[in-house]
Length: 327
Image (cartoon, rainbow, N blue to C red):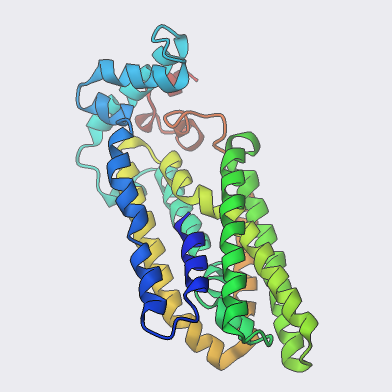
């Protein structure tokens, strides 16, 4: 959410002739954390954490509150509590779990593959070109006015916010896999159009190329917002069992920042030396991404967090709770 107001604050301060033109937008970035700090106290504790620390009645109460309209006697409460309790008990057998645990069973190796590639796809699908180097891309098609660039960026951030909210609401209805595949396909189409528009302008400058590129920018962000923006961290947490979940999330964020940092250094050099031809690299990545998400990503819709293990550990009962083994 902060991105849209930062974008429009930057638009509003664009013509201030002093250093406050950038200091005001930078300072206002303190506002979201300042609001989050007191609101954190209203966030309920995770029932899994409560069970792992012996606070079982509180865990049941939270499950009932969010899944059974505060009816602690609802069967769904007992089932989810039993699944959580069984998963926590199972994780006690893996107290010495390390990152090598990702290599110790077929299910965990598949999880590692998904964590790594979903993070790569979320970071290296052309997102850096569309976001960080948007002004450079716009200049390549003749849109050089700073106010026009800032206005396009501001509209894009509001668009991102609305699409991401809508996509998050559809996750449980459409499923993760459908959204991932749709996201990859839309980004591939948009990046192809983006590349064609830039090449056309380089060959024969026309205003229509600039308009086409702006349309492709919005289409690309629609694709990114539909799938990888709301799903990647959630999918990482869903596919991993309790005893390696924290390590999976740490690996996800490490890779995300590492690949983003690499892109920060690679993109400007490549754009300067290759121009529009550099976008062909992202088209190739996106083609692979479409195939990978379609053939490799499993659907987790309809499963509890503990129940997802049945998708990965069908042949390895050590990673399953008693409920999952009976299923």
